[in-house]
Image (cartoon, rainbow, N blue to C red; front, side, top):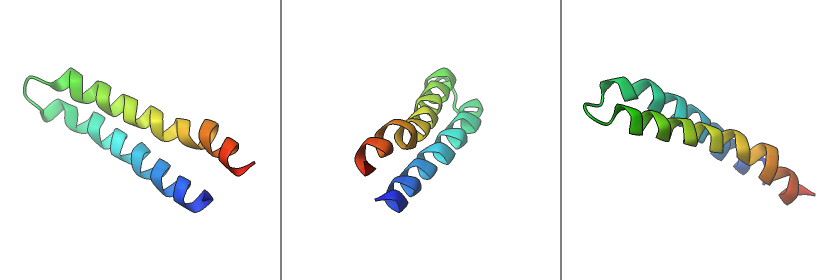
Length: 57
């Protein structure tokens, strides 16, 4: 379960950073894509800190 949680968290974290970077190229929805990337990055950090410690113990 640790490997699976790490892979999911890492993909979310990197994907969120990518979304924030690509937000500058989206016409009309820059802020929506940037905030979405921020939320996805936050979720990628939230999973190993809060969820995984409860699942593994």
